[in-house]
Amino acid sequence: MRWNYSCPKCKAMLNPDETIILIGRLEKVKCLMGFHPEPGNYKIFVPPGITVNQGDIWNFSCPVCGQDLTAEQDEKLCALNTNIEEETHLVLFSRVAGEKATFIVGKTGLKERHGEHVESYLPRLIQMKYLL
Ligand SMILES: [Zn+2]
Image (tube, rainbow, N blue to C red):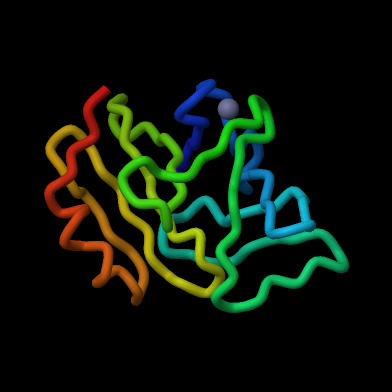
């Protein structure tokens, strides 16, 4: 299955190729970061010279409109949109480096969860629905 991700704010496609491209910021560092498109695959791509340390909380924004992508539902998560069977879903993933937690939420609620660190997020997410 081909995953298509878009910015929830401006609707720009964020993975015209396979890799999802976002702007990452941490203190004085600002760079493009690439993410594997498959939920639950935590491989990331960073420019040479950039180090990603476990536990750092990165801030992500859209490379097209520049808007912050921090999730309204939980500030430790970042939010993107994806289409599954022509319905818009919210994809939420942890902004904490090394933390493996990804959620896909649709109109009927939490649809998928990936990663070994999902537990602490579940109480809030389990009640969530993505309403357009
Ligand atoms: Zn955008």
